[in-house]
Length: 292
Image 1 (cartoon, rainbow, N blue to C red):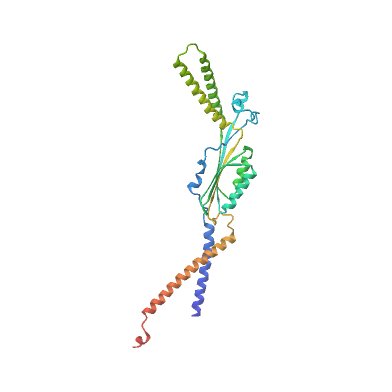
Image 2: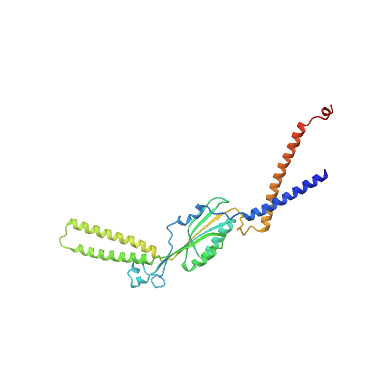
């Protein structure tokens, strides 16, 4: 009997050791969680943020009022650029990484124009719409990509100078048309109908010029900003790319996992053995009856 108990103990120990190894390997093989589709759709949530830069300061027109800038001789030297970076990172330490992001923004004197904090632990999500001076854009992006685990990054750059020149040519054409119409106000003996049509045309052109001025204001704002959108989403720790999940932690987690399943297995085997003994006892014949 003692021999069978030793074998049972050996089998139990080897079973636990095998489960421990499986638990550690299982932790190491856990894939890094892919963000859900909604977690990557934030790049189009905000469309009102100005993300353009210009060279008004370089050509000495930064202090000139916008309407006068458009009439300057140096207007052909104006350049307008647009640059936007989209970053998505996953974090197993969401609160700490969110604080690190805010510290990086403070270091680069970035401005948060929009912020969206959603979800509950362990599936929180933070989206920040950031404005940054063009000279600090590259440094900010490089530091943000080092926070948590970078899942995706894209940088889009566009030269909008042609758009500015097209609007400027349209404005010049409208101004000449407006001046020609205003000269017609001095005509002799105009009919009432002609006067009304003339005033309506002048009103329509002035309205178009106001609309163009708004567009010029978007392109030639006194503050130049590039645009960065940072999305941080939370995931359960333990993935193979989780740098915070060290080998000792994996061994400890594997031990707990193995102990849990070993106890479950021991209870299951005990129940099966006890059931077999119970059934055997119920079906066994009494000794006295068997002797007769």
